[in-house]
Structure formats: C-alpha cells, structure tokens
Length: 224
Image 1 (tube, rainbow, N blue to C red):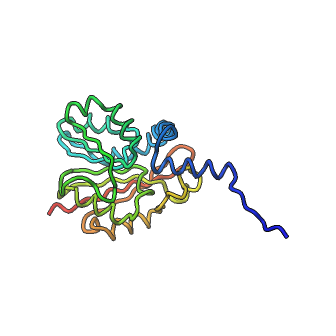
Image 2: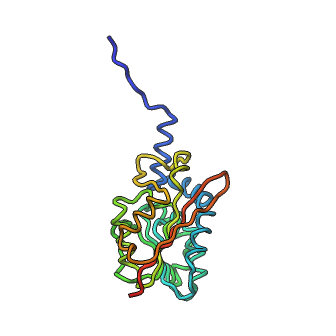
C-alpha cells in the first residue's frame, strides 16, 4: 500500500515567496516587490498622511518605509523638521537611501535597518509616527505599539493604515509571515489595550479601487 503524498503546488510556492518578500524584501525579488509597493501603497499612503496633519517643524518617524517613496513627501511637508525611517529590510533601506539621497545629505532624513519591536530612538524623540501596511508583520503587536508610544512626545500621534480582514485573503502578502489581521473592532481593541488607551483613538474606514476597504487609525499620546 502506498501512502498518499502531498506536494506543494507551484502556485502555493509562489504565494509563499511573494508573501515573504512583502514581509521582509530581499535580493532581486525584493527589488521587484519595491515596485509593487509603490503602486499598492500610493492611495493608502495618501489616506494616512492626510490624517497625520504634518507640521513644518515636526519630527517624524515612518515604520516600514519600503522603497521610500513616501519619505520624500514627508520631508517636503516637514521642511523645517526631521524625518526618521526604520525598516527591517536591508534591501529597502538601500533603495530608499538612493531615492532620498539629497534629503539624507542635507541632514533632514535618517534611515536605519532595525526592529519595529525595539525602535532605535530615544524616548519622546518624535512628534508623529506613521505605519502604512506594516502592522501585519510585527510580532508581538503590543510591543510594537508600546515602542511607538515610547518614542512619541506628549501630544504626539500615531497614524496606522491596514487593510480590513475581509479583504486580506485576496492579497498576495497574506502568508506565513502575516502575524496580525485586523477588523475595526480588533484594531480598536489592540490600541485601547496599549498605552494609547489613555489618549484619544479614532478609526475610519476608507474605500480603495476594486472594492478594497482599508482602516486608518489615529491614536494620540496624552499631552501630559
């Protein structure tokens, strides 16, 4: 008698590869993912930055900046401020550095490879934190939220964009590296259970092309 043998299909292997690359882009595949990120994140980024209310002298941190297209926008808005970027992908740091070299040379932008769960910044060192399509991959989530709270100055704000759980199954970056998925209620619960629960929290649904639904959360650290 021959036991049944299960084989991974090429489709599943491709899905896992793409999902892993979205979580931590690397090598040639990471360069291709960078192009995809610029397209996928364009509208979510607009929605999130619009709610960030950037001031000209803000000190800002973007977590998971990917290819760095959004960093250029932040440096133009916070023209008298500072922008920091942390990404866990060395490939993305390299691509974003090349795209934003002028701002780096001017001392307005600093990029680093690092962990979202242990941010390499001092306490109360930024006025705003931006995280677009990245919280799926942090583990544990409460630690990443605690770190965002720690580096924010009193009165600072965290703006998050995530795709609603009801649409995540359609996306190629939903794979083994996906640690968190979100509904309006689960995102609200996670923020309320964190240090941000002591401040104000709002969550708004936004609609994107092809019927995709996103969630934009704004959490503010108490001013005192």
